[in-house]
Length: 299
Image (cartoon, rainbow, N blue to C red; front, side):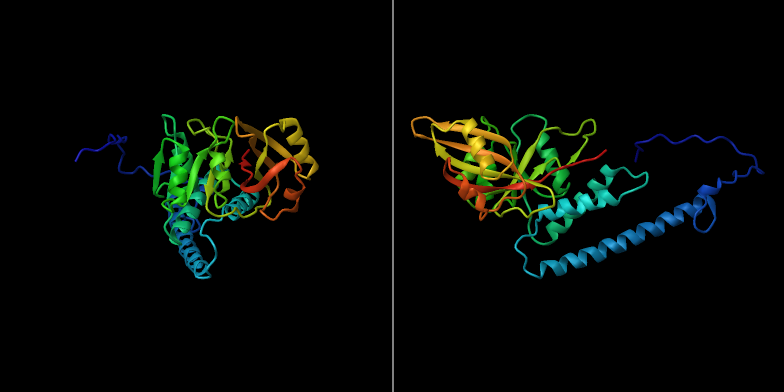
């Protein structure tokens, strides 16, 4: 069998040649230089592995409590934020995010089948890369060229979540969500920044058939059905007067139908029973469409 790497050439040694004494900071816990450091690392690896086994056992106990969903995007975001806040040392913060994203994906899969439906309309697979980054390298996924197919898989129960491009007035999958009250936005991708060279820079939302759980820093989406003549300016003012802080307003008029649809992004966590929804005067109908934990920026 041929090797993928060339053998390393070493300089000849004399019989009385001795390895130089390692610097003091190279000495392991037993004081035996590089060999001691490696022994120390082996011990640490086993301690980490023991803790992973212990964590998995606790996850099994959590699953037995009958909680509503294995996936808790808000709690996962809170876990990663907490770890980043306490992190120190030379290990890059991005590595903490990557390690825990794989760990969270694995423990989610422990609690039941977990499959992704990814809308990836462009060459290069950027949305598929985002899905892998968030939900692990081993999670089963199916790629679709359009949002409608991904949402159909989610609605049929063939996928646990769907990853979809960020909504816009031309990217209108959110109109489908308006007609399916059991579909909610639950996360936004990517969850961390800055992005390293080669990492996907597209933005996406994750939708599921359950409402999101709140974290300590969230944004939410409100879907509205309106009279066709309502302007963006009037709608924005109405949303603010109801007590929301809007950051995005998408408006799509249905020509000939006498109505319009809007998607409004606001600060904070908004649930279906939020009293502010009733204070929206410009609406025919309003509903909470879910939301997401605001992604972290890693310095």
